[in-house]
Length: 453
Image 1 (cartoon, one colour):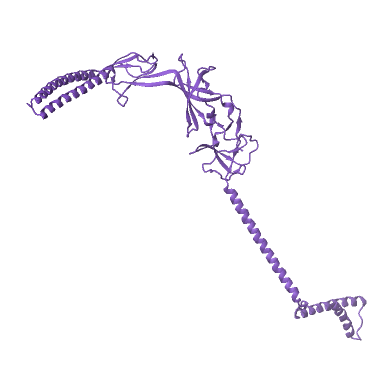
Image 2: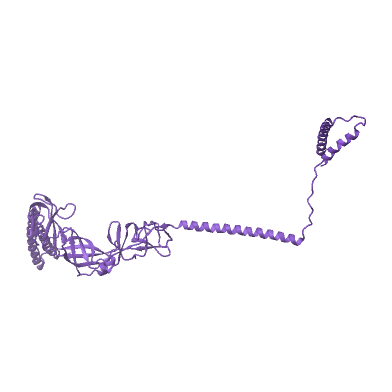
């Protein structure tokens, strides 16, 4: 506005300074000249104002002055600020402690092993307990020679049924024969010496009565006679020994049975005894009845009674049952296998059953025992025997001994000690200990009871 007023006033002054005697120009020329002059005047004024504004210092506006705050209000502000700082610090410490607790809990969880578990499958009780067993001869003995010589002839071969005292073979013993002849001749010499000693002793005894000889000489001759008697007794014993060796030239059956082996032929050199130099001549077995040995698991042991009837089956006789009797038991549980050794006797009058065969013994005790099956990879082998690791309700491990019934290949039959509702660890680690805390893995979709969960 200032610039405009100044610009507008300048033409008036110029108009006042214009000479009074000058002639006014024409109307159109005057207006144009006036406009050009006014524009030039405005430009000069604007430039002068700009130059003037450059030399003036900028104006600084001071903030308004406020009155000082009262002392009580200042203390309140400081207290609030301190309280805010304390609360912020407490929240920071609590957050840090919570983070440390969470980290410690997570670390503890990670240190606890995670295991997969399986539930045992209950097995339907059987009417019979079927156990494997080997059929053995009731009596079996190897036959060795008791004298040295050469085999002259054998009279019985393998498979021959022989009776007690029947001749089996004959051995030629030339050395024993000569030793017997020599011992008999030596005995005759001793008999002759004893007769001379007796005559001498009697003569010196008579001379002692007349004091013709000393008592010492008479006693020596009497002692010589007694020594000759002792030599005769020794010679008689040696003769009897050699006569007995002569009797061993004939080999006889020690009991009634069947010859199962024959290891010599005529002309073979025979050495006496069963040592390394000895040679087995025959092997004889009594096959009526046969013994069947089987190991009954501990859970069934109380139901095995001596004298109880049972039966034996063999694969080569399908559908046939051979009646047997429980003859005896070991009356003790084997600490290694936790089983009771049991002997069952099977009559074999017709000789159909052969010793050494494999069969199955059927005991009527299966309905009294609760059985379950578990995978074979749940079993632990420790010094205490076969065990399984059971996870309790508190997720702690219990090492439990088991009694194994039958082995089905991928699964095992467990006779007591484990319930179907319990959880058994699959593939347990060797470092698993009693009472150890574990985490149970969640079952995968589609898994059923009896499989790893």
